[in-house]
Length: 102
Image 1 (cartoon, one colour):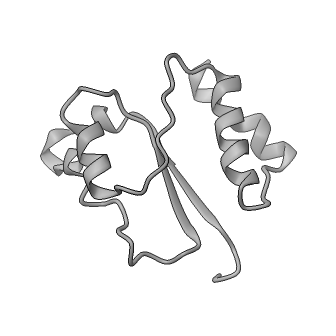
Image 2: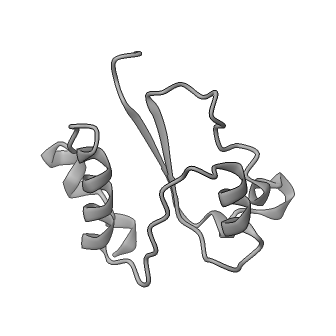
Image 3: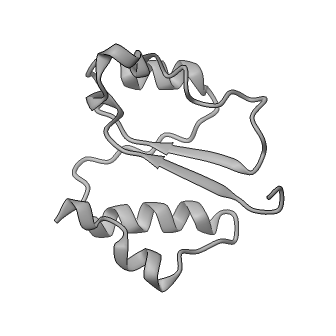
């Protein structure tokens, strides 16, 4: 699907199990990744080195500080990211987004 944009959202990376070495961010795509793939991750600034490792892995990434995220904050952030690519969530997807926060 080269004409489709894929956005993968990974929340709380700092809470991943250390055995997978996910904190090293080896799993984030580098510049040679396909142009229709984007990742959005969340992590605490100073836990397990995840924030610094993410910056090292993707130095051109857009950093958006989030102090305390609510369901509407999450919906707004994802909608804004999708809008940059002229995309939007369906009404059904939007209603499901963030339900795990309740």
